[in-house]
Length: 461
Image (cartoon, rainbow, N blue to C red):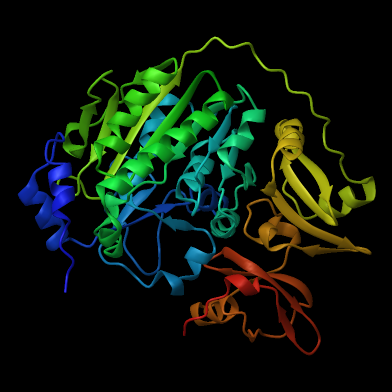
C-alpha cells in the first residue's frame, strides 16, 4: 500500500512559487522512475575514452541538461553487479543535485587554484563532482558522523582523485581556519521531503516540528562555518527539502546575520527550474519540483561574503618527504607530475605539490581520514601497493602488469573470491575490467591472492 503524502506538508508548501498540488501529487502517486549517473571525466580521459563515453550495459543518449557528464538511464540496472561502478567510472547521483556543476560553471574557472570545503559530504556525490570540476583546487571533503565518513572514504577512493582530503570534524573545528576557504558547499541535513519518491519511509518521519528543528540545525552549521570563508568567498547552500523554512528563509537569515550578497544564476527556460526570491531580502534561490523537472526535489542558492576581515596568515611547517631510495622505487610506478611524496606511519602518500603546506596546516588543526593517494608500503626492495593507488589515475601504465578480466571474473574478484588466470605473470598485478582498474592481486607459483578490501566486497550473489 503506497503511503499518502502528509496533508500537513501539502498545506505547508501550498503558497510556494511553482507548487501545483494536483501535479505534485501525481508525480508522487504515479512516479516516473528516474535514474541518473555522472561519469568520471578524469578516468575516461586517462583511459582515452573521453571522446566517446560508452558503457557495455546501458545506452547514454539522454544528457542531464545542466551537467555535461550527467546522463539519464532508461531503466535502473543492478548497479551492485556492474564492475565499472566499483572502478569509479561513474557515480549514481540524483539529477537535480548535479545542478551544482552548472552553478560552478557560472562562478569559477575550472583551472582555479582555490581551496574548497564540502562540509556535509557523505556519501560523496557533491565531493566527487567538485573533484571532477576543479582541476587544480584542493577539495576538503568533511563528514562529522564516523560511520558516514567510512562511506565517504569508499566513494572518494573509488573516484580516484588525488586533490581530495577527507576530514571527520564538526563544523566548529573549522573555526581555527579563519578566512581560509574560497568556496564552501553546504548540502545541509534537512527534513528530506524532496526525496519522498525515492524513500517512502521518510514520509512517516515528516512533521512541521522536524522542519523547525532542521532549520535551527542548518543555522547553527552555517554560523559555525562562516568564519572560515574568505572575504569575497562563496557559500553554496542546498537542501532536498521543499519547506521555505529550510530554503529561502535560511537565505534571509544569512543576509540578516552576516554581510553577504545573493548571487543570481542563469537557468535555461526549458529546464523548468523555478527561480525564487526570499520574502525579506529577496535572495535568489532555485527550486526543483518533481512535476516540472526530470529529477527529485531540490533547492540551491549562492551567496558571496562581503566582510572586510583582516587576512589570517597561516603558519605550518611543510610535511617532510621520503628518502631518495624510497623516491627511486616509487617513481617507477607513478606518472610524471608535480607531486609531493610524504610518509604517514609506514605508508607513502602523494598529493599535488602546491598543497603540501595546506596539508600540514589541516593535519595540525583537524582529524584527517584520507589525504591524497596512498601509494603503498615499502618492504625491503618491494612496494606493497595500496588499494587507493589502484583506483587512482597516477600509476605508470608501462611499469604495472595488468590482468584484463571478463565480467564474471571481475565479479568474482569483487566478491573477494578466487580468480582463475592463465599462466604467465608472477608477482603483483592490477585487475582491470574494460581497461578500468578494480584492484590488486598477487600471483604466486601455486595460487592467486586477492587483495580487494574485505569490507567493500560484493556480498550478494
